[in-house]
Length: 270
Ligand code: GDP
Ligand code: MG
Image 1 (cartoon, rainbow, N blue to C red):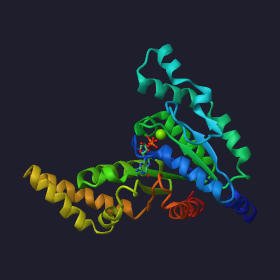
Image 2 (cartoon, rainbow, N blue to C red):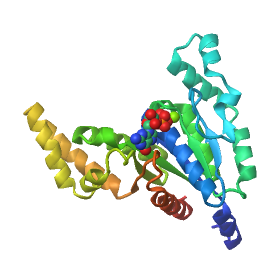
Image 3 (tube, rainbow, N blue to C red):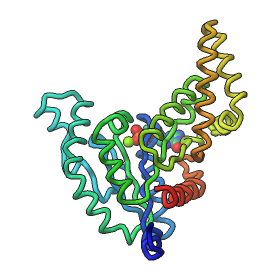
Image 4 (tube, protein in one colour):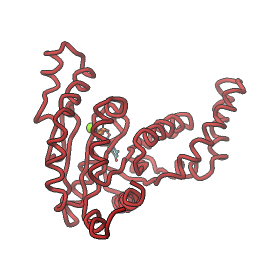
């Protein structure tokens, strides 16, 4: 339905990378790394910080939620705990998100990448109305993908790996956006084991069952695991996986290749 001219316009648009992941997986450190990598290349990215509670931000954001809302004030005013404060701060910010998007769109022709950092606790973004509203608003305006950051050294046990992949799968399902699994901290633990498990689900199932036998003999667990492995096999078909170190800068080229694939997927499918 779009004209060739409109397609040309689309190609000039930047890709938005939503950086999502469990607390401590390294989202903010990765933001800093991506930022410095792009600075060393040609064009600096446009950066949004959506974490109201980040205490040390190692990069400069173009738009920072903390400039609009002070979550500690929100906590006091509404008599909330930290998570309630962060959630409410995000809700308040979301009411202004059309303006934020306006700023991003104004700069859209001059940048190649828009990077978005999200709150430390993953569910504040992935299981809130605000997170969904912000994601939809961005994704309906510009090519968008999700970079799901994984703490590789902490996901070497098959059961943790399974949980983390199922969580990632739920985010893919909710957002339906082009998706990258970003195995971070490969300076501490290479992600080869993860790639092996993703390629060969029988090997993964064997690793899981090994553990299942140690802890309980329930056979329904084994059959549940078998089913979940099949779900994940299907999930893996729909995404890309890269290993990076936000600390050392390893894997940046692979990361941006994956983002480029995501841009193509978005332009084709959305
Ligand atoms: P966030 O909560 O997802 O934003 O995580 P942070 O970026 O704040 O990082 C959490 C911790 O992991 C910090 O202590 C970082 O220094 C550390 N970290 C992040 N990326 C890496 C990495 O690639 N390698 C190593 N060794 N540590 C990392
Ligand atoms: Mg962070």
